Amino acid sequence: MKFFDEAKIEVIAGNGGNGAASFRREKYIPRGGPDGGDGGHGGSIVAIADRNLNTLIDFRYTRIFRARHGENGRGADCYGKGGDDLELRMPVGTVISDFTTGEVIADLDTDGKRIIVAGGGKGGLGNLHFKSSVNRAPRQCTPGEEGQRFEFKLELRVLADVGLLGLPNAGKSTFIRAVSAAKPKVADYPFTTLHPNLGVVRVDQNKSFVIADIPGLIEGAAEGAGLGHRFLRHLQRTRLLLHLVDMAPFDPDADPIRDARAILEELRKYDPALIEKPRWLVINKIDLVPKEDRKKRIAALVAGYGAVEKHFAISAISGEGCPALTYAIMEHVDKTRMEAPRDETEDIDE
Image (tube, rainbow, N blue to C red; front, top):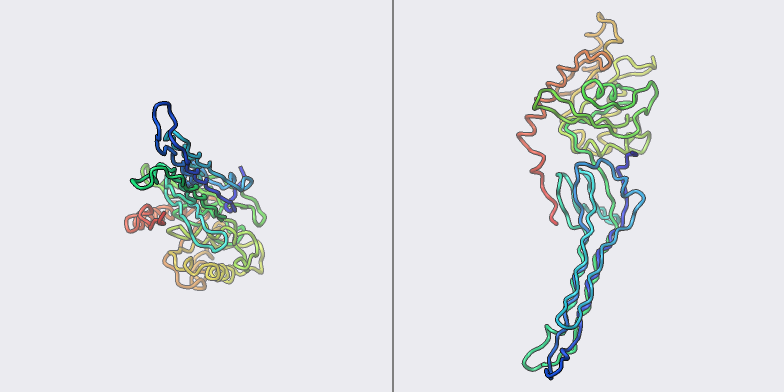
């Protein structure tokens, strides 16, 4: 299945049915009085978060969604049937915003969350409601209201505890294969990863965290260069960022320190909040460096990188250093879960 994390849709709620102006007409009952029923309400459009979905492909080709109209009222006190609501199931983590203004309408951040994004119109009143002691034969009724109509932009932001960032071929996909059951494609050319990959890292029987791998960033990503800028939104919900740096790049003229700092600058340009997230430096591919030179080169890279909370040296291909890193991540994730549980985030008012 193709991965789509953006879509534009139009939602049209149902109109309310018209009220009826009718009078009771039966044998032996003269002047039976008004008996026009109300129109039914129009169906609403409801967005529902569903953890069984992981892409917006259902909204890529079907762009217009209409709910049913309410039925008109009839005589003999018959009220019109209300239109059924139309439920749109979306992946957990979908953000719904107004296409024109950009205002966030709903954030489907928990499984099963339901938000009415377009309300159906109210049904009109029949002449039954207008009778009084001075108006015994009312002929007025009201039409049904129109349903709401909007154009929305859908953005999927995956819910992961840990996000990986770095240059293409830094070893992010290899790392996620090493520590989880996810099997993203790995090859020796840039941009092997074309869409985010999620992996569940199980540290103990009852302890696990979710890690997200996005396409590699390059300098100028915030302005649209490369692929990674399209997926930086997926890092916005993470609790921790792991910055993977290739200790032994293929290009002999490459400078890992300069490239690492360039990635940080791209994060700052895209969203200053990303640069403020907890971030650890992970120095990868130490197996390609002679043992006698490792400590010196690791120290130089850490010093050139700048202030960082923690740093780790690993080899994703051999697994060296990976267990210690995953245990440290689990400890950090457990701590942040206790401080700010994800399901207690502020809800958007319906």
